[in-house]
Length: 305
Image (cartoon, rainbow, N blue to C red; front, side, top):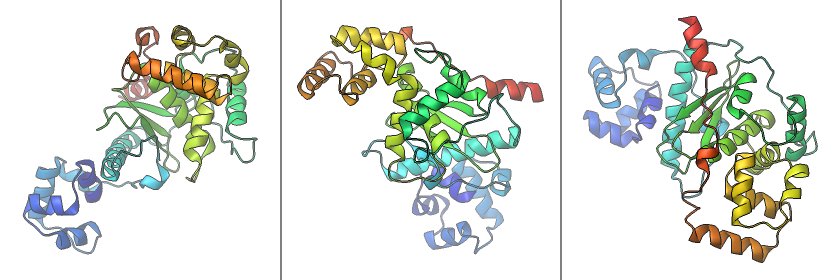
């Protein structure tokens, strides 16, 4: 728990050792369980890391970064990823202590390997069918994911370059953390992306991110339906499609290119137009997207109290 608290603050061992007037070697031995901390150490840990004494003695397994799935850019430092992972694990432990292993949703979360089920697109189509979704945009996505037993948490990440992550501990409800500081359309795509991880991936491999993107795109924008709407695609039409499908104009443009409905030169032209209008940073029509707040965890906690 000491390592978790330290990384959640963004400190290296050297940083923490300097803060408490110790040395890195001694701190490393404490974190490794080779040395029992003294009372003065515990007081310093509580003060510097801003945690209660009980925090360092609680039971719980920290899920390493290798089993948490991230959406990230290459410019996001590894140190920040570790900080995010630590913060989410602390939040996860708090949730698990209050919820336990209770079944939260009315449905079962599907488990479908892309390799055994025709790829990520086919898996997304199968999940839509299993959920009984009608044609068109997915309505109430957050509530839908919660109905499958997942905990959805809106969280302020240290960086907007990290959209979300999911953590699944054995015998515990899966937890999806979404960056609450991002636009609603982007959060919807992030949630579908994390759902793809939970449905398809038990162990990380080099293609998990591509598969999760493919799942999210097909789940929110089924190719059989949306590809018919790409004729005469321009900025105005991208905006109209955003209002209809609840995802960003940029995601829709990427989808059109991926499905081969526009050529390379026209794709570059539209991206230039998006940049000139400032839409890469702030898109229009966000006010049309419903604000889907997680509710299931709050309801469960209220019921228990």
